[in-house]
Amino acid sequence: MKKLRIIGFMIFVGLLFATMLSCTPTYTVTLDPQGGSGGTEKIEVTLDEHMPLRKIAPELDGYIFAGYYTKPEGEGTRYYTALMWSARKWNIKKDITLYARWIEFDFVGDGSEENPYLIFDKKDLITFAEIVNSGRVFGQNRMHDDDYIIYWALADNVDLDGMEWTPIGTGISSYEGMPHNSIETFWGAFDGNGYEVSNFKITKSNDLGGLNISTFYAGLFGHNSGSIRNLGIIDFDINIIAPRSLRSIIGGGLAGRANSIRNCYAIGNINIESNNSTGGASAGGLVGSTRSIRNCYAIVNVSTKSTGSAGSGGLVGGIANQVLNCYATGNVTAMGAIWCRAGGLFGGRSTSTIISNCFATGNVTAISDQSAFAGDLGSNSEIDRQYANPPINCYHYEGQTIVRQAPEGEIVNLSRSCLESNFNNPNFYWNTLEWETTDWIIDDLDFVDGKYAQGKHPKLRFQNSQ
Image 1 (spheres, one colour):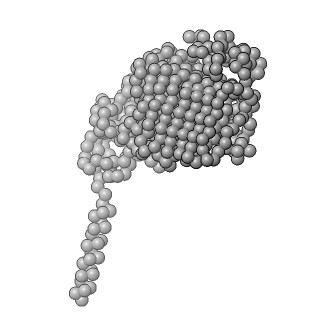
Image 2 (image 1 turned 120 degrees about the vertical axis):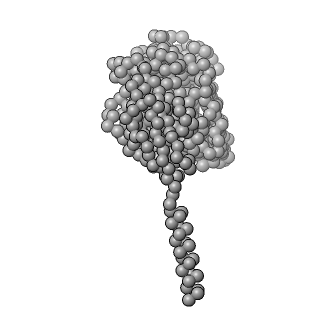
Image 3 (image 1 turned 135 degrees about the vertical axis):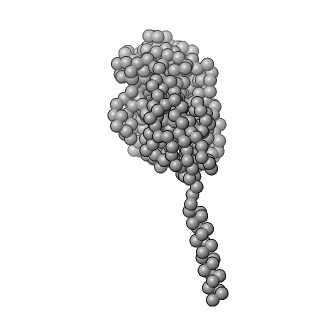
């Protein structure tokens, strides 16, 4: 009987302990609208769980709501995004107040195609980036009824004065477990109107409010799901050594990731290093990855290095759909411990990609402890090439050097060789490449030893209009 009492007591203690563990602490959080009105006032939160959804954001005339933070004026830690999605799990063991952040919205225009919101200067561009990165939806998004596109445009050249730039569209998920379209991205249409954004740097890859993100997108735009056209990006320096906690990093002068790009160019430098062996680094002179790109060029030296995989392309790191009427002149290097790909125009492509009327002139280097592919244009493996569309009417400079150092892999030649004289002859661009006079200006060329002299290269038509 005594033994039974002891067993019964032990069961009781066990049940009591299990009950105590199951009672996860909850706290009351007051939502201070900081001058706004109409939003949810108080919520109950549970430790180590995400913020409750379906809460109402406040409103304030002339301002955009940009989320709730632990300190006023957007300081401290963010717990709600602009759309009242959870920004992180609750980790504070007490009742506190969160404060609304407001961004003044005084842009000229109404966001229509005929009258886009206009960006005149550095202040406007920073404000635009802050709005997008707050989680605000601008444009078509399948998660919402906003089945329309909001238009933005430059109204002048913008000099960022060498500042450390936080990309437009961080690409981070607003709420773990939410669909992919919940990531902070730009969904609208951006028209550079032939102007340039210049003089910025990106050296930080994890300064995103303390979030443990898996992929960082580096460029003027980080993650872009809309369209970009008629824009030049110059005098930029992307130089990132990523922490081991960051699985992947994807970079490009214009964007880390973009959906559709037309009539754009980039002139600068990119160097990206990844220290995560399960991920890697990928970069292109203009864009890290994209679905479609047309009438674009990059004069950018691109270098990626990784303890995992690495990929570098003179114009684009990875392409899914098409690249038409483009060129790249920068030197390209990829160094990946497990594997790497490097190409004068692109680092990698899907088997359905269409590439036509393009050329590359920069030198290519691919180095790996295991497998490396290097190519005049791109670097798909032999198996990939069996199923891929071959490039159409594409060329490389005859003096281009291609270096591959690895136990496995190969050098890939996908295009026809051209002499220096070809690149100095306007007929090469009009007749051979079949470029359109409505898109390009070919009237002042100086190509020597694999490089164009400064300013003596093919230009987009709009570059002479501003």
